[in-house]
Image (tube, rainbow, N blue to C red):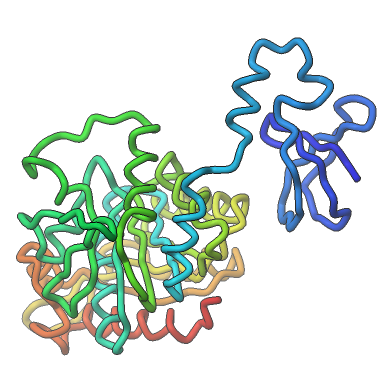
Length: 335
């Protein structure tokens, strides 16, 4: 039995088998631990340990250490869904939302029931990509009813469809974003799905921490990381990988987007940036490389119109690459 200090909170540990980066003795019988992989059963002592006596923040810590009242409903909603996948990127502008939308359609074409959640609260784009812009989310006795995209009936939730006007700016601090993301998960009547994809904003901020925390009991399958071949983008991917490992999120694989330019006349692919950077990084970090998607004018046009590239341009290089990646994700044995 140990008392440990982790992220400024005290925990009573009942399990002695865990791995960690380092251990420092804070005071007698209290250890500070930076976890790498801890599968432990613990009870929070935040605000209740001896060292908390006389602290002015004792009551606040006790309140924050309690069980999340939303967790039970989140578990109920998410346990009805077989596979939960996060779509991440270290930088903005790498085409993550376009890939998230395209992968949801590609998976749905394989006779799968799919949901897609847009967690980019300040810059939502899934509504346009999935051709549900202008529609409004309905609130029923069972919760919010997700919008159904005309593309393979993918279920969609995004902040863009609950705003009074689509061009309204969302100027929110972290707690309000957290509240809305939880509502997307616990108050939306998703029903039984095969996959649900979470399109996250760039970086590792409130939105990422919220969804990872909410899904902790629902056992998410992992994350798909999207990057472009340039070195400046690959540098930030290392941070994203580090985030996933610290949070205990399995990395399903890395996708290299904008990998070459497809000539609209002859279909020849020319490399605009360095070639194979993402694959080399995946090999270095011992991660699965899921594939490359070229800059394809057909994909760009479909994204602008909110149409389905798999029906309009099934033989285009981008369409073929996306189908292969969707199949690869299905065959990786997620969970």
